[in-house]
Image 1 (spheres, rainbow, N blue to C red):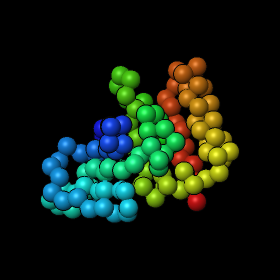
Image 2: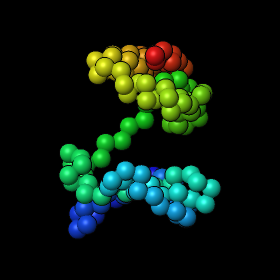
Image 3: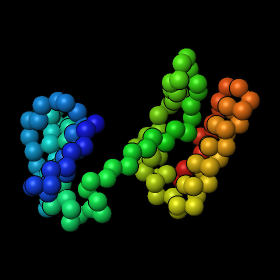
Image 4: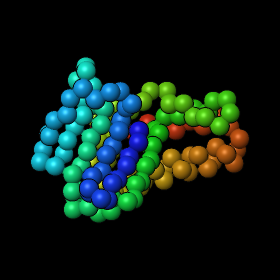
Amino acid sequence: MKITYDPEVDVLRILLSNTAVAESDEAKLGMILDYDKDGNVVGMEILNASKRMENPYAVEYSVIVTQAEKTQGDTIATQQPLSLCDRRAFLQLPLEERRRILAEQAEAMAHHYQQDTELNISNPKIS
């Protein structure tokens, strides 16, 4: 994934794939979606980005891992990725609940590294 912002034209572009764009469609006023030949979204453009977002120059990226196991080296592989529905449900939880879940995960990781045992973070129920 690649994110670029061009302040001269005030456009934020999010490229999801290096696949060639076959078609573009203005889904909503000021939001253009790019599709590949199979109809998959491969990118999007946000026009007048500085008026639509707090700071188009800043990006915050995070990955939420709920079930993980330590594998060789420093890589972590998830047993089963969360579905988009589960990810959205997590983001819709109240901020304090998300912080509580993340704090539990951080505590489990800290305990794991202190004990030098296999990490086992349970998948929080998201409703």
